[in-house]
Length: 254
Image (cartoon, rainbow, N blue to C red; front, top):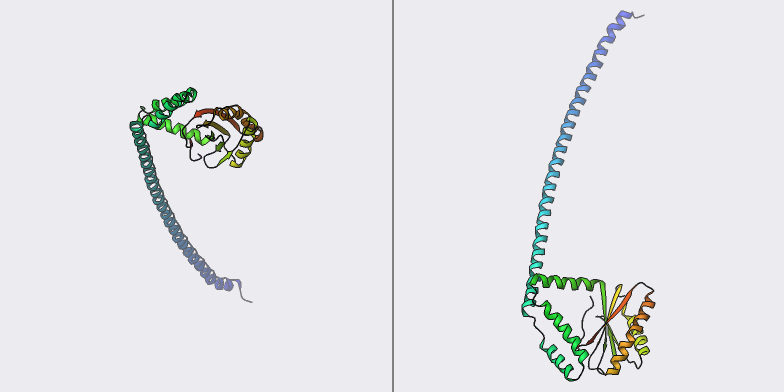
């Protein structure tokens, strides 16, 4: 039997060899860890640089967009102001309105002449305004039209009534106030959905007094039918503009 001393002497080299192998593996793994840490740190630094570059590029792009937007706003504002100033300088009392007012007074239609004169006077009061003030006034009108649908009911010289919403129109015959209201109501239902507030403007041309009176008395009935049909979703109101020269007040729905 091999003695214990001899067995110990044989195991010692094996143990030393194992320690050497383990130490070598430790050194190798440590070197790998150091290399991996260095590579990871390099990737982190690269990502930080890329992020900084992207942020800088984004800020530069944002600055260019902001400058472009401000330049565009200044350009539009300048254009609008120039247009408003041009209107302020060049618009005067239309000669056609003067002729119409004179003709109405000569025909004894003083009420129609007074309405047209008032509208013309109001237009004249806006003309002396400075460009910025006139532009602000036009913006207010434009903003109002975004929330209000304008319908025009015009009594033609032949006694017929034409209803328009700026895109569509319909013409009806009527002999009584009730026919005026019900037939215009049916015609208006084909116009589609207006805005929540609808303003109906009643105008007439060289129509007979009887046709004008029936329309004036019949339009409240028309609004009653419209309000009932809308079930409270929309509100309808009207204004009697009175006489105006031929041609619609507005040509396109806003």
